Every structure is written in C-alpha cells, then in structure tokens.
Length: 456
Image (cartoon, rainbow, N blue to C red; front, top):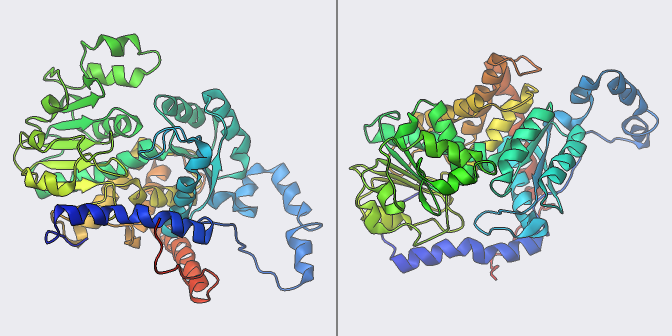
C-alpha cells in the first residue's frame, strides 16, 4: 500500500467511504458472491450412474463400514461451514443472521480464493448457546471443519470450547484465534523493526471481547509475561480490585482470570491511563474515529506501535496516530497500510489443517502460523508500512499451511502424515486451482464484469 500523504484529511475520509458506497450495488449486480460448482467430469449420460444412483451406493457402503473413508470419497476433507447467528457482526453489533449473510458469503469467498478451501455460509436463526452447539453438531458430518463467525461475547467462548471438546473435526472461532494469529504476526515484526523485544515491551489492549481475550492468551503462550499486558474493557482497566468482574466470573471467567494475572503495575483508570507509557497498543473495540484520542497516543513510549482494528472505521484514523508521534500503525482495513486482519490467517491455517485431516486447531498451530506470516513479510523487507503480507501475496497462505500442518503432525493430532514438500504441493495446487478457475470464468464472461459506476 502506497502512502497517501498528499491527500487532505477530508479526501482520505472520503476515499475510506468508497467501499461502503460501492458495496450495495455490487452485491445486487452479482446477487451474492458464491455458489456451488462441480469438480468431477461429466462426459455422457452414463456418468450420472457413477456419480449418483446406482453407482454411488458402493462408496456409501464403504463409508458405512469405515467412516474415515468419507475423507477419501467425498469433499469432506476440503469443506467447511462458516457458521454464525449474527449476534456480533463486524462493527455492526447484533444485526441477526439474515443481515449477517453477506459477511458469511464474503468469508466463504476469501476461504476459496485465498486458501482453496470450499466454504459455505450457515446462518442460524437462534442465538441460544445450547441450540447453536446442537445445530453445529448436527451438520458436522458433512464438513471437514467448522469456522465460527461473529458470535457475541461471552457465549462465543462457551460455544468454541464445547464444540472443540465434542467434535472430532477442527472448530475455529476466527474472531478469537484468527485475529490473535495475525495480530501476533504484526507485533512480532513491528517490535523487531523498532529494535525492541516481544517479551520485554509493554502492551495496552483496548477491548475485552473475543478477539482481544484470545490475543492475550496467545501472546502469553508465545512467551510474553502476563504482567506486561494491561487489558481494558468498557468500564476501564482490568485489575484484581474490579468487584464487578469478580461478581460476573461465573458468566465470564476469562475477564476475571486476566484481571488477576495481567497488569503487574496494578494500574487503574480508563483508556488514557492504560495507554500512557506503553510500547504497543492493540485496540479491537468501538469503531471510531474518535474512540482513541490523539493526545493519549502522545503519552506512549518512543517508537510506539498502534494497531487500531475496529471495523468499519478504526478507533482513530491512522494519519492522526502518526501525527501523534506513533512510528507504526496498523488497521483492520485493506485500503490502509498494514492490514492487521484475520483474512491473512484463516485461509492458510485451514488449508494446512485440512490437508493433514487434523482433529483440532491448537494455540500452538495458531502461533506457528503467526511466525510463518511474520517470516514471509520479513523476507521481503520490513518497513513502517509493510509489517505483514497482503491478501494478494499467495505465498503467505502456502507458508502458513506448511507450518500449521507440520505443527499438527508434531502434536499428534493429524490423521494424515505429510512432509513439508507434500504440504507445499497440496497448498499450491488447491490455491492455484481456485484462482485459475475464477480467472477462467471471468475471461469467458461466465462471471460478468461489474458495471464501472456503482454506488448507493
């Protein structure tokens, strides 16, 4: 992403609004972004007797005798469900399953184009935790993995934990593990770029929802002392004296746990007090642009790093953070430098997970993915506006798939043992096929070009 310092603040804001203005017309033109397609050859009427009745009975009987053969005879090994109840969609809140469907379709698009993963949106017309868990268990036999998306806090933790325990396929909550992986990757490289060390710097983490709770857990697993982290929710800094958190610990044990374990300095107060004198600020909270103030950032340590990841508008505009003296800024948006967005992670992570038929996705697999992302960017040359790869750099997803697959094998949770070369070949083949297929359909006009002028 090229710096746009020549634009005025008003011009930058107008440019940032363009995707939202174009999106309704583009979605209406294509009537959605995904559809099912075929992957087998059909040369004559006789082929239907193989793919459907009577021939299909033979693989059905084999799967009945040996359920593992479903990975061999069906698309299960490359199929995932993107499941949501629409209770916490992007920065839009509880908009429900129908309104959340465009997001789930978009997720499926990214899974396919970036990772070669077949994904299909499943939106549930319930927001009851037990009903959601049961619904996912009911549909699980048809999929090789489950991607949970946009569930509200704290039920998102319960749903993930239960399904990971009760299913033998990987269940992943991208707002938790996915965001944590790419955020860790960005921090690894940003800290390195400014000449500091991951386990020595101090962190202010603004927002105590699914994304940041998981990030704190992953950050600690990666070697950062819990005391170096100051976590903030809507009522202020988490600390052992927060009686409200202790009273609610049965409903949200995660916040109480980190109130006890983080914040070694014992700070109290609001966001401003949390941000003062820290090296790294990670925000996944209320959309801005005035959620975080410029003057608060001026109180950070020298060579400060700020990731403001709220969507659709970051907590503070990146140029305002730079004007405050911050050295490196990342957001969740693709139209600004340093997109700290889980789209850099989940396609490659699932690619590697599915290719070894892994039974789950562990924190160690997520950390392996983070270091793989970081190394991919570092090999190309880090600078203040490039600390993580972009979504168009296919090699990052291939590298993640290798790292994740190997870690799953090392941890003994893979059903299929592959070498690094095998994993590379699998990932490159499936990703290339997805992207080549899209290009062929576009070149043939089967996917028509979008109108040049579309706005709402």
